[in-house]
Length: 536
Image (cartoon, rainbow, N blue to C red):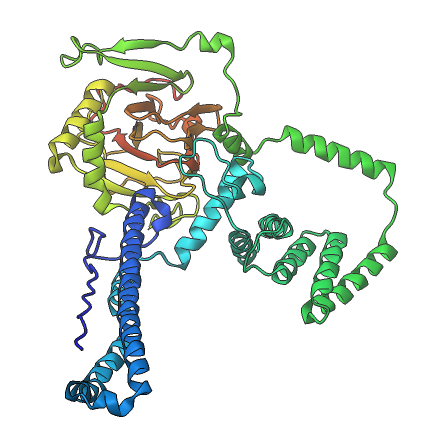
């Protein structure tokens, strides 16, 4: 008997179009799309492996069935069976050769191709930092957009195309990551969600004992001793011998007894002080809260009187020859500071070209350390960016010319076009684009002065979130593909306009691509003359 050879091939070609492994995947949805292709390739390899194993077992099965019939016949009359010389020869051949071939087939490892592919692709896998970054992004989205854990767990988000949900094990993992960051508030929320889903009957590898252990400690750390004791009692009902829980219970009971002794009834004056403090807290609206409200679309509303001063128009760039016969659409987004939006200002083809040029160069976005001046990554800026020069592509050159024509400012002293793609919960918290007086050396190396203005292209629509907000004045500008917004960072006097402090809200659902041009003071002396007053 001769066995058919099993041909098993696995494509080992790397799907990622780069010669090095990327890090910080969670900071760019654009780069994360490559991981989808990687995972698809691994699934194909896995299915090929399963197919090879099934083919191998099928051959062994056929061999066993054939020999089962043959040996049944032979054992009924061994001498008569071997009296036929062909049967005698084939018996010798089977035992000497074919059983050895079968043994080799059984011992053959069909996983080599899959394991090889897995080993090659593993260098492009996300690491612990990426997983933690993605988890923190979910917590950030939860806070910014006031999402409860159940809504997030069930994937009930606005504008989603591919609904997904979190298992109890996923919720437990989020709680653990929050715990390692000493974020006991989110630890409590997500451990409670994991426990809730298990109580509702979800089948999971997550263990209630472990969940209750984390949960009770997180609750205790937030000062709720009674709830911590209740959760610890529940844990001990499941595992009476749990050493840490037994120790915690004794400690909680001791603390509870001490607190009862020390407690004194609060006086009326203390109650009044608490009420006054509460009123002050309500009146005081810190920037963070204003920023998050604007991200949710709950910010300050412009009065009808001010709204009447906002117009839309056809704009020819102050009679620029390129736009006299074909003016562009422009509309006012805000009055002070004046923020204008240009509609249909960049085509889909130009957007795709810019993205293709930028994608291989995307790197984790950095900020300038205000003390050292060094560039460094920051938790409040979650995106990747790349820089494109006009000489690299006629498309980029054309875009630069368009910005110069419509702003009336010289782009020869501007920075290169910066392209940014935001990651999971991608954001850039409130910041200034211009250098303040305490940062005199911020753009010293460029030798072109301060950033006089910002031009920002929106290169994608965003299903939910992702607004550009100005907390100082209450303005929210929402992404719209093919449009651009423009504002001055400096007054004509050269003084910074602090009302332009702005932020990029976390992307809740979708993929946000933008590109921006920072224009500088040098070269604008006659294009935007200095005023006599500091605030003009």
